Every structure is written in structure tokens, then in C-alpha cells.
Length: 180
Image 1 (tube, helix red, strand yellow):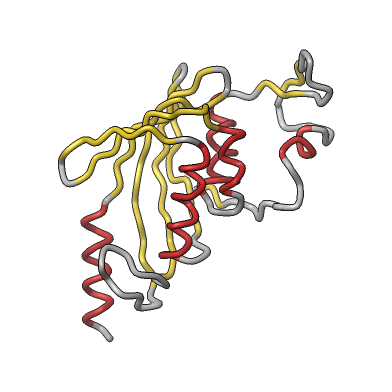
Image 2: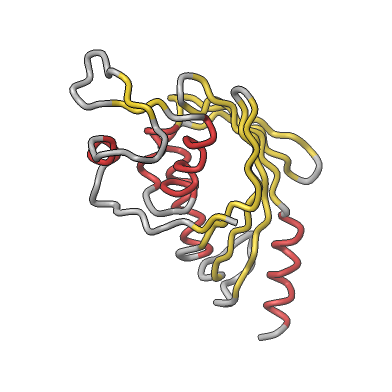
């Protein structure tokens, strides 16, 4: 399992890219860009995306990892819904999660990469501090288990398919309210 280190929000990703690297990343010429760019594997990009954005540390950095428009395929109550998300929309989504679950912790439990796609299964643990699906906050722990397959083009997320155990979340919320 991977636990994420604290991301320093005061450093931009451009600044981080200028630091000396010894992590297997390959520096490539940035064309018109003055700062060096690093060629990362799709797996490394998704790990960084989870560490920086999905973790809630810096949702505003979604623009670094996501294309301007991302097709998000979501399974909701056995039906598939596809929405178009911008990086800004995704950042708002993560901030909403923080409003419900506080400073949650995300652990990658499985990560598999093949060609343009990366599969991630995670465990997210947070405290129910804000209303969620009409359930009032209990300030008790809630665990989310989810998985997604991300498709990347030119080192950006362009599409993903996500499944979250929402039934499990609702059952935890019911149990937590019964205990009050």
C-alpha cells in the first residue's frame, strides 16, 4: 500500500520540475518552455495525480494532470453516466469531498498500467464532517473503496471510468447515525 507524503502547496509543479531528479524520470527539452520538463510514465503521472490532487492536498493542480475536457464515466446505482469535466470542475469536486470528509487519507491499494491506461484501486478514510446524501455529519470515520481506469494522451488524463462503493458508504452513515 502507498501512503502519500504531505504535498507542499507553496511549491508549484513548475518549481518541483526544476529540482534535481533521481527518481527515474527522464528530462526532455521543453520546446518553447524555459523550464525543463520530465517524461513520466503513465503510472508515475497517476501516482502523482493521486498524491497531489485526488488526495485533496492541492485540487487546483488538476490542470497539470488533466486535459481541458475529460470524459468521466461513472457507475451510479447500476447505470453508467458520462459527464465532461474540466480540471476546474474536478478541483471543485475534490473540495466538495473535503467539505464532507475533512482532510481524508487516500491509500493506493493496487495500481496496474498498460499502454495508455492505468487502473487504480484505493481506500479513502475520512471523518463525516459535512452533510452527504442528506445524512447529517456524525464526526465518525467513513471508508470509501473505489477504483478507476484512467486513459492518458500526451501525459494528460483525457478519460476515466470510476466505480465507488456508494452502498458501503451509505451503510456506514446509517450505522454511525444509529450509534448516536
